[in-house]
Image 1 (cartoon, one colour):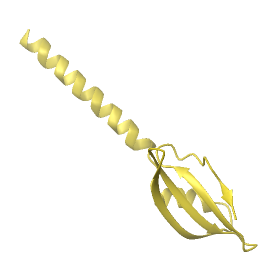
Image 2 (cartoon, rainbow, N blue to C red):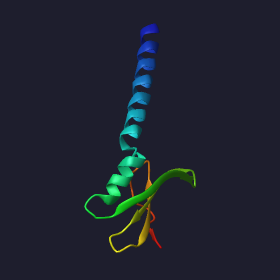
Image 3 (cartoon, rainbow, N blue to C red):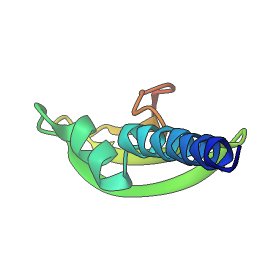
Length: 88
């Protein structure tokens, strides 16, 4: 019975560790989000910050396009998805 209890505890610990590592693997840093936006373009990053919006960590990247327009990108930190692009 004692060995079964230890095995169960080990299994639960390993299961939690795998869940945490999967979460960390999908996280996108602020630098990675900025690189994702400018990759393949001639846009230049003017600023970047991370905010909490509706309980989610969101990277906001401000860029200037080659034609001089300011563009804001919102990147979900957990998934890396560009979920709300706005122009000004």
